[in-house]
Length: 208
Image (cartoon, rainbow, N blue to C red; front, side):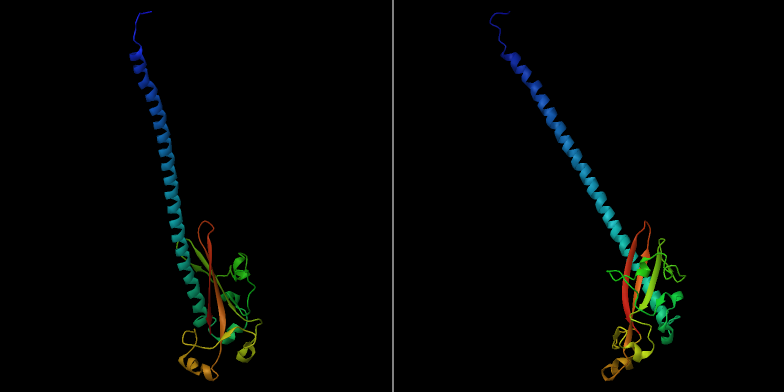
């Protein structure tokens, strides 16, 4: 043993090694937290992109449903269902029911929900873009297949003619208050089948 040796310098030289060990641990923890934060940000960004893409695709399906609505209106106004007498009975080849069809709690006809339905499997389909198929059903909102204006007035959903009604002429609109002809309401239901088993349903009504 060296007499009168001063070990304070030795103790002083050992301190930086312990401090470097603590700094290394803190650095590793900070890097780990930074990595986890980066992963969370990437996941959040991917989720946002998927949501935006899903909304855009849904909007496209809604736009294509308008093709089905226009096809149904064309059937009623200028097609095989133009004559009122034709609409007194079912015309399945034109996706038409003369009576109100049973519907789900959301108001969608069961025939449209059933992929094996005669209406859905008819040749009267609309081919949309991006491999979509558009099916539509027209049902007259009547409790029975009644014929003629007098017989349908109590059995069908009716509305007085007006400027905004399909099939209402200016004369009918002006004479509504003095016994003008009431119009029968028809419901148009559209189902759009897209890719990845996606589906949307759209409905509207018109009066003729």
